Image 1: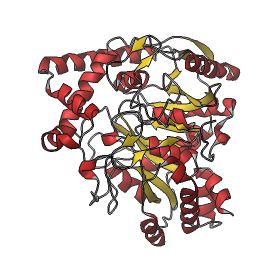
Image 2: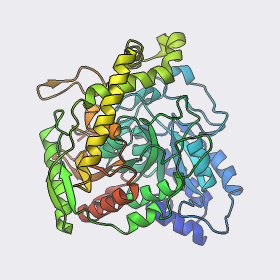
Image 3: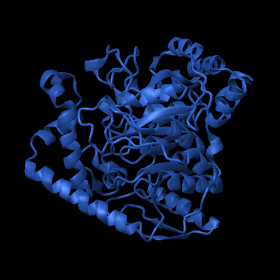
Image 4: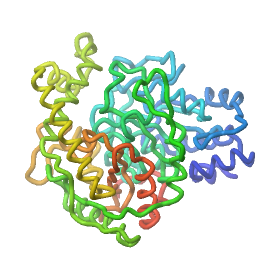
Length: 473
């Protein structure tokens, strides 16, 4: 097969050919290298490559007698540049770590490698994954391949672009307030934020935290399910980690199911949304009806989510980045400084209230899911915007007071602990991608993947990627 044919394969197709011996991991690495050289200069998604390391790993790749559903068989992947890969630069998009070489693999990478993944590079991210526009002082900005004047979202922006342009078949992401879901929406790929503990990661300063999750990204739902199978499992270094389920996630995605009742909301009842985005997402959710679902306007009560999330996020920033502010304030972007100082200025009463509010929100969401199978809403409240805007400052007459609040459509869902994913459902009149966020019951990834696969089947646009980067018209 030619290099162009190889990079156009789905992850599942590539693995099937790897297992049969029709192609080799080295051929896929070569194809990826050729594609990266051809398109990455136009989008700047993969600033750090480790292709020779991947080739060396391919030569000693184990061949299990009974590989599980998550066996990747030597498939090349890319890892987000906040996640450690032993022997490879991990900068976190920060000048503080511009020359930092990781000594060990993150737990999530360790598990992926054991399941036959070959890491070929690191994907670009905002500084410390803070913000939903992928730019930093180390590597610069990553551009949206659908229109290179626009943002690709963030913070897993480089990962989404690598997938959309055919530089990788699978990619890791992380998600605190939408960092898997927003770039997936902006690049017309699929990103899944799993339930807390579903994907082991670390070591972490707070191994019991339940806000920031690692998860899979791919070009279609079945490939995301495949990667999730390769990521799950108990690890002693991740105390919230869970056993792999008896039924594979891949099996759930390959056997699509139709939800009985779908609740749609354009805004969760708590914020503004661009009218075109709302229209496209409403039309996308309504397509479940073609498979027999009842789709109606409905949402859990997310009141108080903005304040609750901002308080808990700021507290987490103090835990994870507070010491860096004391030593390297001059090397941190202003948004990071604001977020850490917000956390430092909070009282124990502020945090206690936020925890109580989160608990009440979780109960309201769980009750809502007694009557509905899935919640559908936009994955981002606006289409991709000018990449030179640091963050979205307003929608219509509504002004946001900080760089985070415009992501409310995702971070309110984060508070619930429910699995959530972005699935492509359409394009704006100017040709920019729009993703629909689907939210499932707590720990209901398999069910959610089945519903997402059904919608993907109905909408029928997943084959539009990979694509060559497109300059602004």
